[in-house]
Image 1: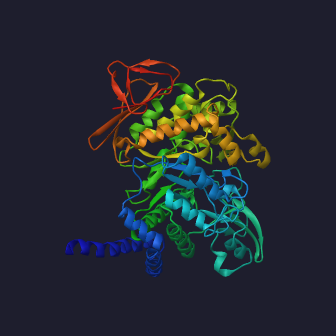
Image 2: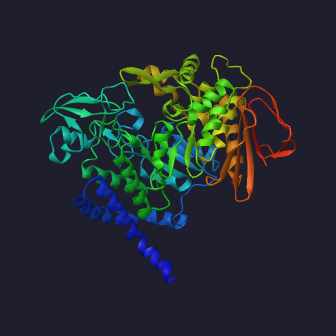
Image 3: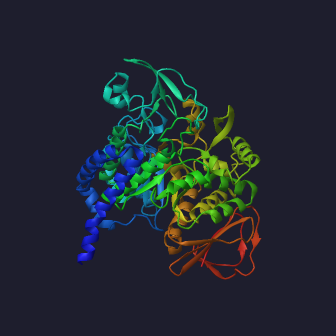
Length: 570
């Protein structure tokens, strides 16, 4: 008993020592000494917060996710009704239709914002009043694992921080990266076609300010330790509001160095390590999810040596699954599954509020194959967003709902449309990771052209706001697309959560039966399941697999794989 108590006493001391070492690497020994003292004080204060204390007791310091968990991705106002705050409507919708089949929810930025669907944050510690208030967030967090965005890289140009910069407040002059004159930095990686620097007239002269994503999103300067401390306080504040999963938005862009690409730099990784230790000290149950939309090798670098993010987005998956169904060939998906180590926990997703990024396909698909996905997207009524590399425009993401990416909207009577789409989702659900399901995929939404026309923003094609009344009318009609997709999705998720072999810690083996099949064997604590998904319109016979029990529809498998069939065989 004394040894156990001694370990508990030593643990915080060891974590603080590691925090200090990281701060020395980022800044200096002198700065680290001061920051760790301030940081310990803040962590101890937040550690006494009632919500954090209750969650520590509930989870006994263990990460919160198992095979029973999946996460719905949604905006606060994706479902609305008159006379009710959207967060309340969202909560009511989930409790009525999703219930406990989906166990988590990622509410995209619900803070006051000036653009980019909430990602131009004006106030990190407020809920936008048009959505609701913190009481609504707390209510959702009591019923679901809550994920929230820590928008690290930038703030709104309308934020109080930047307003004080424009006024010349000396405290805020070094919160941002600025130049007195225009500067060319062609080596900097650009995810957008917009200029890297934006001209602002301030009370202390004309300044050219670093704006990676848009003129309204002003990059923060982490060379200033005060910026880091302010963002750590935001992180701790979110934990105290019941957030269990912290999504590190655009984390790869955080640290800038002259004469580099300014993405995925070593000090960016040090900051992620620092956050991991802060969670370990304050809220060991909480998890960090890195959003790093880059090729596979750069993406998985955010796991570090097991000391950075708990989870990383599987950015290679959306384009590779789309490629599989476009060609009726799952070999590239199987390749991704084979190269992915069993000790890496991915946040598996196919669609989100953004488009289908193609950077993650690099190394798996050739340029010609990526170009074929571009052509397919345009043929299916979608749009394409570009980045500039060496003065040349290259596709960055495909803007289209995943339903319309998988199915040709010009063939609305296709009898296999729902089955084909659900097979694509089943590929994601079969993998070793935590599934993230965008609300428009859960509801089988189609391309929303009106949003693009109104805003001129390509991503609005997959960001339609839905009336609860119209949605419920559709869901009462068993022949409607929304009903059929939602019912099919919930059936798959309900079956998955009862199969222990889908635990995130399970072992996995790709079974190469036929290139038209995505087949993976999952094994956990003596239990085993073989997931088989047909990505083609062909019927396939599998000799030797007859009379195995299919855990999805509770029948015996006869060896015949139907077009776009989905099976989980004991």
